[in-house]
Length: 265
Image (cartoon, rainbow, N blue to C red; front, side):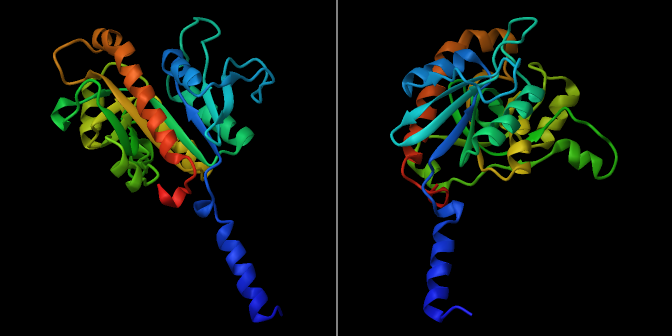
């Protein structure tokens, strides 16, 4: 049996090695669209990884580098190999998140992107939200317990100090694979008490929770879902300006993370 003094040293070392109490050193930022990713790649002066850590043949792109002492990886799922459009949606988001965690072992995941917002919940075009929780609105399984599994509610990593420091709103995020909103989706979104909706967040949250990696969700509102303009039209109209606001917000988040432990967020 170790002497009391040695026990104390061992315990102190154990506490110091807890992930919550270590300075964050490595983050993965998952972004679905190239137009959202490239300004941040330039801001952080990242380089495309020419020796990719992902399986051969996938279009996923990793940008990597060091910014203010943080190892930053921006993961963009790339262009669809058949149609050439951004690979958006929950399937790709899940795969990319899983592969990124396995290959890179980050301390924290940031899912950044644009989203629709609901004026009934106080959202405006250009608002930046930090999601308090994520859920799905298009996985309807009307069987007891399976219904809860379908919704897949998960809490985002708690960041009270980050919220105090930055001018960011808080709201629940609801995720589905369609840009538009059917009446069934609308009912589910209302049931989820969501302020914003996207096509990736809850999928990223599911995998992050499964593999026990803290995740936060930074979303910028491009369109008002319960407004008068068609969603697709408003989305395209506001994408460039809102992406600039998103990139600024993500930069502020990363600056705040620098030198801090998870427990200080």
